[in-house]
Structure formats: C-alpha cells, structure tokens
Length: 417
Image (cartoon, rainbow, N blue to C red; front, side, top):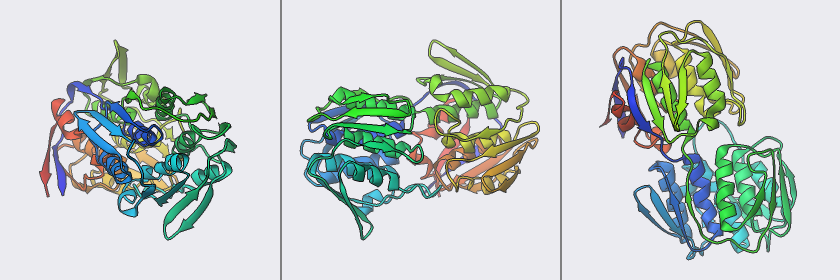
C-alpha cells in the first residue's frame, strides 16, 4: 500500500494541465453498450475507477484497448448480461450498466453497488424509473434482476435531483419506444457530456443541462469517437492548492464556467482568478478571508469540493460555516484535519471552522476520495512533514496528482508503506 510524504510550506507556481473527467468518463464508457461496434473515447484519465469500469465491460464481453489517454471499446461482442459483485462492489457507478444491458438484451442481472462510504446513496430512484418504463424488477441475493421486452417511454419525476439516476435513465430511454421525460433532472456538466455522446450515437435528446430532459427513443445507436470534458473537481482542487499555499498557478484545459459557484467563493475569500486565452491563473492571497458555503446540486457549490474548501477555511481570517446538504456522512475528513491543528466543531450537517494561523504536519489517514485531496492540501500548507496513508482512495479520482503537484514545486513523493 502506498502513502504520500509531503514537506509543506512551499508556494506552488507554474503550469498544470487538467485531466479528463472521471465522472464523465464512467457513464460514457458504459453507454457504449448501447452502440455495438468500435467506440473511441479520448482524454480519458488513468484511474482505478476507469480500470474497474473496463473490467466490468470486459466481463460482459467487450474488447477494450488503451493507447495513452485514448480508449477503444468494441461492444459488438458483448453477450453477457450480468455484472458480478466482485467488480461492482468497489465502484458505485457500475450499477449504471443495468439500464443499457436491459435496453439491449431485454434482461440484466447486476449486483447492488459499493463505492465511497460518504452516505447511503440508494438506487431506488434508478429502479423506480426503470419500472415506470415497463421493466420487471426483482431484488434477490444482493442482485438487481430486470426484464423487459422493450422499454417504453415514460414521464419520470425524480424526488431529488440524482446525477446517477439521470444518467442511467437517459441511457435506458435512448432506445425505448416513445418519449421519456425526466423531470427534476440533475444538471451537471457530466450529464451534458453523456447526452452529447448519445446524440452522436444517434439518440434524440433535448434539455440536457436543464431540469427537464426529453428523450425520443430510436431503434438503435451506432459507435462514435468522443473527447471527454476536463475534470472540474481536479481543476477546483488545483485552484485551492494555489490559494492555500499563497501560490501563482496557471491551469490549462479547464472550463471555468463549470465551477462558477467555487470561483465566486474563492474570490470572496480574496483569491485572484483570471481567465485568459482558456488558461486560468490563480493567485493566493496573504490573508484568506472566511466565507460560508452550502453544498447544493449543480450549479450550486459542489459537494465534491466541500472538503477541499473547508481545508482552505481552516487557515482563513475569522470563522466560517460549512453546510453539507448532499451527503449525510461527508465530514469524515474533519477528525484528520484536527490533527493538523484545525479548529472545527460539527453539529449535524454543519461544521463551524475557526481559522488558525498555521497547520502543523502530521500523519493522517484518508477515508474517502475527496477527503484524501483535502489532506494533501493541508499537507502542502503545513510547516513540516505530513504522511497521508490509504491513498488508494485518492487514486480513484486523481490522475498522478503527486506528479502534477511536484511539477508546481511541491515537495511530495509517493512511497510504499
């Protein structure tokens, strides 16, 4: 098992390039089940979750080849309609194969999912939507078994905006008979990217990026080539890395418009952000101002940036309040931040953060993907050495993070525990 050794106190500077989006790549990979033949997906990050998705597709019968950040997925040979527990247990997004398999083969058997322990995140909205589209759903021995001769269009109103549910039912509806309307749909850029892929394949989709998506089913889809959008959460993490070290960093291949809520809060905190010729320059301030945040569905403040922003607020002038409104168990990083000398008090879904003058490096342990990033950020700002263990969580969502940070001047290295 690997860990990161960070000697903090260095201002980051220079240029860094954002990798492709993990959260866009995963459903796009899975959508290729609907388009039998050779699909080519580029700007793909090298991550554990990507490898897991590839294994799921290969288990189903697909042929997958990678060359650099380009992955070729031939789903023509797919014949198996079952995704087993051994693969699905490590990554929640694996459950998204259920709808495409059902749409293509009329039946599917998929294990209930796993993933980060940040909240329950049940898939009942996924299953309710498929049932509304005519699927016969049964839960047996930890598996979802679904049957349908052909899915039928339906009007589906989500009780809560769900990214996975929106992606799942949008894929399932692409070849369903008739029109499907998704109301209270999630609006994330990753959903728009998936819709763009499906439209390239021949699907008829309108409204992606709004809370109402209309899908008119077609008889079949064809394979495509597509470049994945940049990872907005990685980009946001680099922005905070520049801010928390008082650095001056130029971030390439990011879409600032995907991070409006974060940008506004960073500017409120005194961070300078300039977008010129599609390169975003982030300059930290000598004194970070305290700012309150509340996580919301997109375009609100992203829950995936909450831990990183809280880390910045630990060193701000004054007190700030962080409210987590998406997941019920997403303050697990707080106990580790306290080891750096942070002053944080939790009450329910709210954390009150009183800024301290400095962090002191400490041995810490990652508990989930974004918590891992927050501990790395704290280590970069600390006045001595930090050891971050259990970084396999980090490897689920960040491509070569330590190498990119080292390229900005950080003293950081990966070692075997």
